[in-house]
Length: 396
Image 1 (cartoon, rainbow, N blue to C red):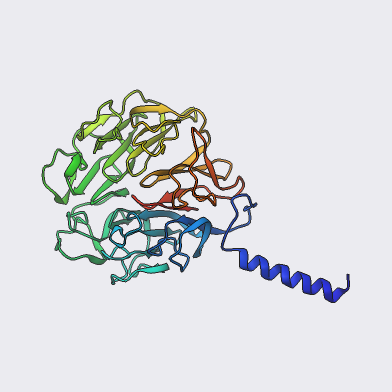
Image 2: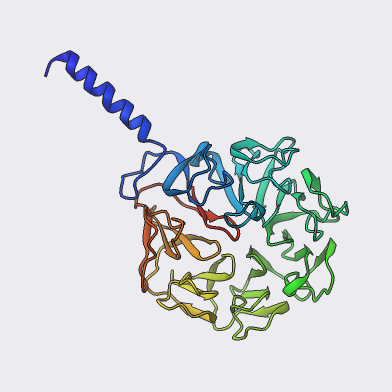
């Protein structure tokens, strides 16, 4: 081959590679790929790739590399505009970017205009934690909580008007020394450094954990709950991991997501049955998971679309051990599916897949205890998230 031909061929290959870069084959080696990836529903631009088309395989979120991100959180629900699907990313420099639907001001940019690519939330710096709910966002800065978006159920905790969206970050009342937050469907949860848990917003289904029968605009301590080390917040239920490695749970329990062998809502914390030696906890929209000290995974709650991965479609009111799922580093799930980041760098999924929410390039759901592969081993991925009750997935 002549020198000029080699140059022409190299140029053609380079151009082809550049054009292909935003979409990653589920079977491609991805160890050098730097981008945050997203797939599934995208009608409101919630995948952050500048488009509004469904993506069947992982596509790059515009301008955000994995090395930039400390935490990514998906909010909102399904394909309808009223479902408000969006995402926020906390960067390692302490700033926050947001994208997607903005009907309730949940992007925090001072408008209610949607955007299909990430943009910085003005006025926020030195942020340490962030969490997206159904239609609002919480952020921790210097131990204080800031909130924006819908306040219709007093979920912002600001004491301000509940009829209009709040389009920029506002301070939450009466809380300091906060180390983590969780935004659910119209309610909010904060974990303080002293191991206490505080809640505010919508009371329905017992989701505040205080026995309240009214929405609360001021954070209230969840009684008889001490030494909490981690929280995880679903749409209508909450898990709290205590210092003795057991789980307390409260909130909606129609599908068994509280895990106490009943389907009665829990307005105050109850023990998750038959589990101890718990290392980590995860909630999806209406299901719950725990990684145990021995590395095994247990799941309970909603399972009508096989999102627990136990080979059935029966809801589980107590934890079932999922022996075939090992090496789980992170779990997230939306309305009807579950994603997991494994310790080999891969991302797998199970449950429904009608709108490509599993990211494997198909719209076919796995059967039995089968899983799909969105990203292969060696991809460098360590975390996953999804829109709160929707059908969009993210990996970083």
